[in-house]
Each structure stands twice: as structure tokens, then as C-alpha cells.
Length: 179
Image (cartoon, rainbow, N blue to C red; front, top):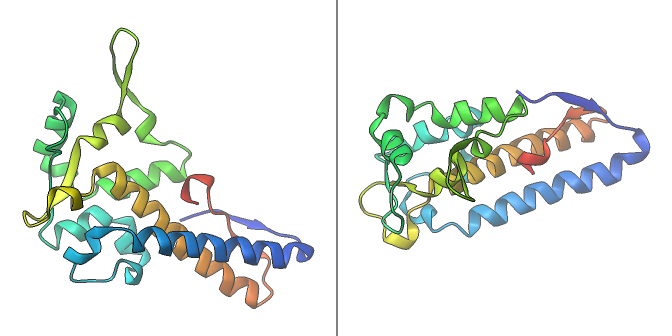
């Protein structure tokens, strides 16, 4: 999925350390999520395909999108929640665009007097739940996309370490948005 880049042999130790830092940061981020308590699987054991399709993976485990009870729900968020056809493939769509260099969270949906309402703002209004999560445990869609990026960065950093251990210097280029 990600492009590859060639590193210099002199940078081997530095790049290996960088990859290990990405893995550690991703694992620390996952460790802080209370969502883990409600899952029948370990997030760190998901395959690359399951991560790319994270919303589908959660939907397969009885999760669904809903309005965030802490926010006034915009029309854009209501439309997203009601349009169930897009839910299953949403995280895949997000990552595919991110790899192309487009972060759909930055898309401006509407402009008020001095404020812009972005898709990222709308993602704070949408949560995923299974109906049993307490209010503080319900992840927003924005948090789930951050989780997805962290898990994907971890997968590619692990792949890079394996390549570097074999003294292969063509490694996956982890986008800054995935670090």
C-alpha cells in the first residue's frame, strides 16, 4: 500500500531507532484506549487488512455509528450516520485517500461568519458504540481514524525492521500522517 524509499547504509541505526519509536508510540496509544475493554480481540493483533478496514472490523463485532451525546449533531453528521452504505468501507476510503496525500478531515463542509466546519470537526460528532460503552469510552470517529493510522504505522514499522535486519535498504515510507 505504501511507497518504498531507499535509505543509506550509514543511516541504518538511526532509521531502525525511528521505526522502533513508531512502534512504541503506537503501542502506547493503543494501551491508553478504554475501548480495548469492550473488544473480543487485541487491536495490536489485527492484520493489515483488518486495520485498513477498521470500521468494517468493528461493525463485524456489533459496533455501529451514532451521534456523540456531548455535541450538537450537525446535518452533515446526521447524514453520515444515516447513510449506512458508506460505513463498512469508510476507514478503507480514508486510508486510500491519505496514502494519495489527501486528508479528507481537512475538507471544508461549510463556512460560518468566521469559522470553517471541516469534515474532521464532523468526525468529532460521530461515535462508534456497541450500546454497552459508557459515555467516556465511546470513541469518536476522529479518534478511530487516529487509531487506524497508529496501527498501520506500527505494521509498516515492523515490516521495515524485518527488512533492515536482512540488510535490505528499500523500506516502506511511513507518511508523516501515519507516524
